[in-house]
Amino acid sequence: MSDQSSQNVEYRGYVITPKPVQGHDDLWHDGYQIFKGRISVSSRTNTDSHHSTLSAANDSSVELAKTEVDNLVAMNG
Image (tube, rainbow, N blue to C red):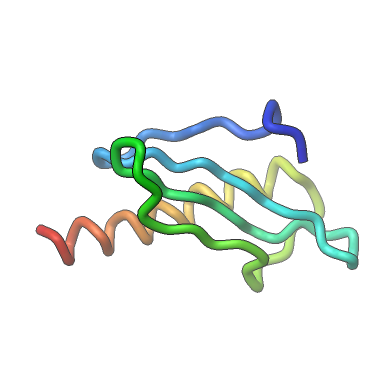
């Protein structure tokens, strides 16, 4: 995946960087990194989600990361 294919998303004071990866099955798996300021607070790769296109994987990765951000905000509330 090229860096040009993903867009950072600002959400609730965090920055989400989608980082899907293509598996050996030619499907895309969700992946992302979450930052607070310039510090990485979470990273996930090769999730069980599978997508046939990079675009779908980017969108899904962002949505999955937003759920994690919601949980981080709730815990640190």
